[in-house]
Length: 231
Figure (spheres, rainbow, N blue to C red):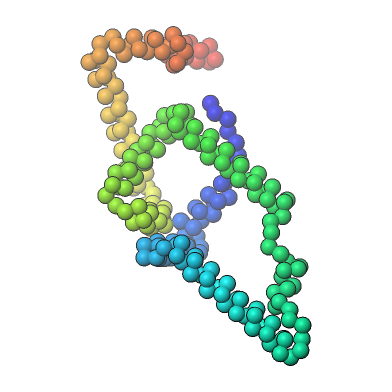
């Protein structure tokens, strides 16, 4: 069992849950509108070109403003002073070491949490949890071959805000269908395992015996005996 640590995304998850369940319609609607607007904008314009255009415009306009103020001060026989002097002297832009260390610690905790989660998935610590991710990535892989990633992300964004509230309103019906699907899937897998055993003869049992001998899996008999002893 891999080491567990505290979830640094707990507060973020709570906030995301509030947004997708439309607990505050104004915030949820604004975030959805911003997300869709961003996707539409980036589909037509380059973020790099947009950044360069904004930087050119803002810095250029500010240069004209500063030089104009200095020229005006010189004309009225005043010492030319940068109108932003108080910011340059009293409020320079830099990162405090204490703040940087705090953010660095938070970042490391978040990265470690994600790495542990990835290990649990890849190393099959929870078989059902791993197969869910396999299915999810397969669906995304398949959809990605048909749909543009930006369009796919837009659909995902809309579904993220539509699905939870729809589930909340139809929870009983959805839970019943999910239970039936899960039951069908388990029976299908069990039947497949039985068929594999029948067609492979003693290979399955030999492989299981080898795995038990090497300590790769636990023997069902030992597990049963230990359970009885504990009882």
